Length: 77
Image 1 (cartoon, one colour):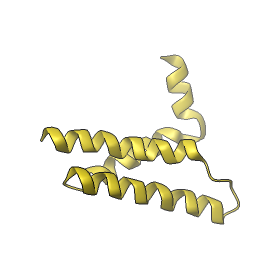
Image 2 (image 1 turned 180 degrees about the vertical axis):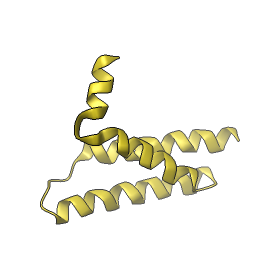
Image 3 (image 1 turned 135 degrees about the vertical axis):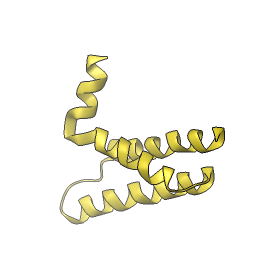
Image 4 (image 1 turned 90 degrees about the vertical axis):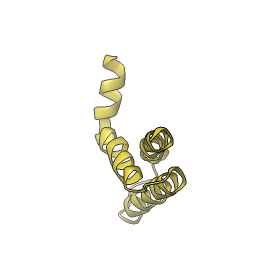
């Protein structure tokens, strides 16, 4: 458990997970939640790339994973 928490604290990865979840919750349906999280993740990584940082697939994946959690929420509700 400590390794997971340390991984999420590294490079503010937990913010990507929470951000994807919040964007997905504003989607109001499962498909739009996933699509919105996908687009938000891509835009965040494009911003980082344009500022000189390399594309980070882990951050992108965590943002989409947060959106996937919201998809599960919308499928249950």
